Image (cartoon, rainbow, N blue to C red; front, side, top):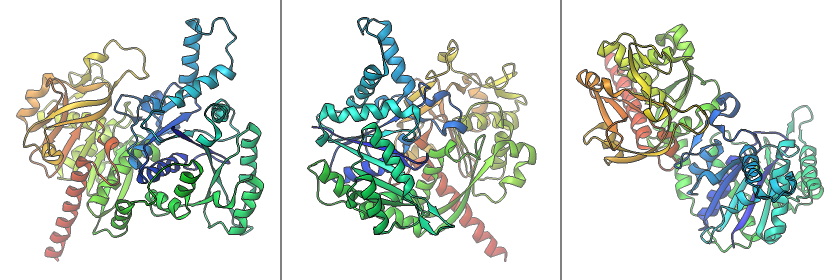
Length: 544
């Protein structure tokens, strides 16, 4: 029978429930178990697709086209768990489903209420991940215990153990043990209050994972265990990691979390963990052979989570290339106002990420021109590719007023235009070209060589595309269309042959990068940046 682990959080938000859930999933997989992971989000939006990155961070897209929470990126980077639209549910989706059932008369005239109808719907969402091949389902509850928005989800998981048996459920609560500098001591009271709120709901946590800045003494762990009704061995320390988030799984192993979970749920698993790959990647991170800097020029550069998967994919490529990477988060509006020379000088590579909206576009175009004319490795993703086409059209092809119809509907040269399938769409949410789409790569191109094959499948999230009317003009001026949709109608990849590394893609390769398996395009981009840095050092030594 499938076992269930429920992960909740208390005291404050942003404690790292997603990272912890992903780490637990990875450890259980390493013990030979089949794991599935999901996130239940308490906000009323149907999905994060229409939410501002300032509010929610990046929108993470799955193969099936689901627009999901960024924590699902952690799940995919740490585990092999198959993710689908059943891996992320919001309050909006739950209520919408119940209301639609009520409209169809499925409740036979009953009064529809939070209990049992909303909670039953939540439980059904959890049960959808169960099957004969799955040993453990990990369900992360978004938000913080005590939030009014989270109450239906907490009530649902309380009921769940009654439905399937307490022996088949494990409740893990992630909490904060803050350090007060003035008192020079850790404070356990916030954790006690958080667990108290859980117990009022009817949930007794089986395991406490305590986030902390300082090591928790045995005395404090005993105190936490006593007042929270949790055995000492189940009070697990999760100390902040200054070096890398990829240290977290190893830290949890050191404190015996995987063994505790296996024993509590009576799981039949391997008694040993094979973490050699994980230890190797940390070794490579600690012992780099090169140091380089990459500029990420975006509209939301000051908000770290807006390009979360981009930054992680850059780090993964750094691990593969034994390179320590300093990422410069550059606001594209600042490039507009101050010029690329001032802000981008000294970087070994420039990346333009995806996005929407006109703000900062001219800064991105200027950054691309700077990279192209100075032979700096350039990588454009989604909107980054579209901006690369605009820049090339204006400054090489000779289409002075080239633009995208997203930003200038009356452009005399709309080199980027709305996809045909998007022209009659009026609803914003979930209506873009989404999810895994195949692409055919031209043999002998840089990208085909990096992938090692001529057919790939990558995830998309866009409404606009290269305008095929201009394809011959661009090709005549040196732009190579290295990848297209199988029917040849949509441009997926553009390259410049006379440049050290100039690649732009319409899709989002960052969603398929893992710390132990860097995405080939990011790997190639960072390799080119490392080569540039080595060449500059050699030239400098010769000049000296």
